[in-house]
Image 1 (cartoon, rainbow, N blue to C red):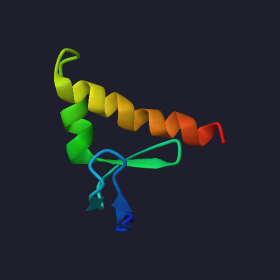
Image 2: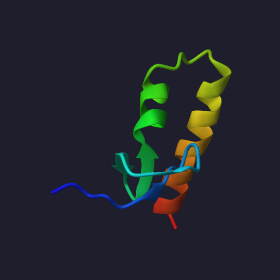
Image 3: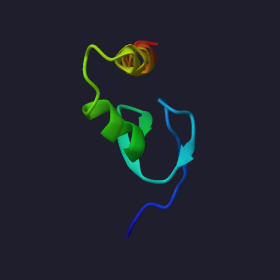
Image 4: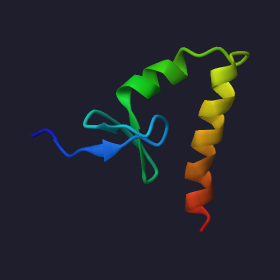
Length: 61
């Protein structure tokens, strides 16, 4: 049985159904794919790192 619940992606802030959970946060499959194919020298890489840090901060509260 598939989970058809909609979640807000921590990266793009869009509501999506498909994706992964990292700790307690959701990352949509589109952002996940873009993240793994982004070069570390790309400007968008820093944005992804910034968004992912939110996960770490929330686990330390």
